[in-house]
Length: 178
Length: 169
Image 1 (cartoon, each protein chain N blue to C red):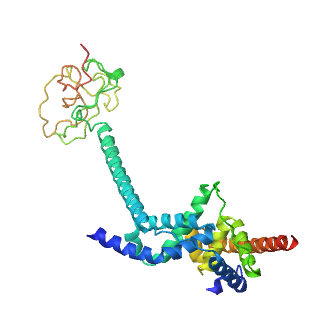
Image 2 (cartoon, rainbow over the protein chains, first blue to last red):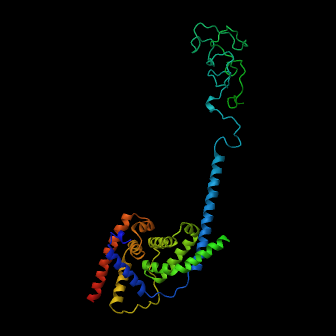
Image 3 (tube, one colour):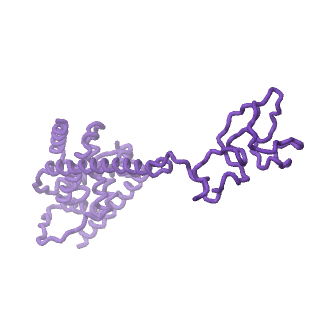
């Protein structure tokens, strides 16, 4: 133990210890009552307070968690509703030159999903080979492709992407206002 | 049932050790009544953590650590204030040379900053190692060494000054 006393030195430490003993011996300790009962009562109170504080902390954390879960978007009672489009994009579907996203349709003729046509008569439309013949009406019912039928682009069978006359499933938010 | 056992164990320990704790507290604060308060606060905190302290073992070291930390905390918060009393307690009668020196020593010790005092009491009265003292005071061992050296130097200077004052009278 005295090996550790490199700061003060063993001799000085022993002297100080002796001085401490002298101080305590000379100090006349008054008759003091036991503090055990008071300490036990105070300790009990301290423990109760600690338990109450930790319980309050747990309740607060739980409340915050619930509040955060309820406040998150899409987790409330309206969670089944589709999200609304921004107001600037709401227009009648029939006059929209921009194709709207539609649910993917599995290809029936083995071809890749076709690019959505903007103008079927425009030969410069991307994805349309020059010279390709398009039917005059986009509402022509599609016949199942034969074995040698042209799988190329054209007015596709995609019911959701067809221009005028093609039944387009209504989507909330894109309907013109009353 | 468990609570009763716990309380009985604590009471046994506290009854046996409170006088020792009070003496340690007196070395720190230099007043028996303040020492009594310090002991009570220490035992209160000890009871609140009794289950864990018993499990960890070395209850004495834990109690002394609480005592020292409480003393330093209370000093920092300024709770140790001198209070005016109506009747001045009787000063101890001057005895021979040795008691005079003890009084000088005690006065010098009380003039040290609380942290230096705590380091000296733990290191040289409790006989704790540098590491134990550092852990109890939540400082590095280097700080304990430097505070110990400075405390001793200052104490020596104070004692010499007080003795010189006394002999110069």
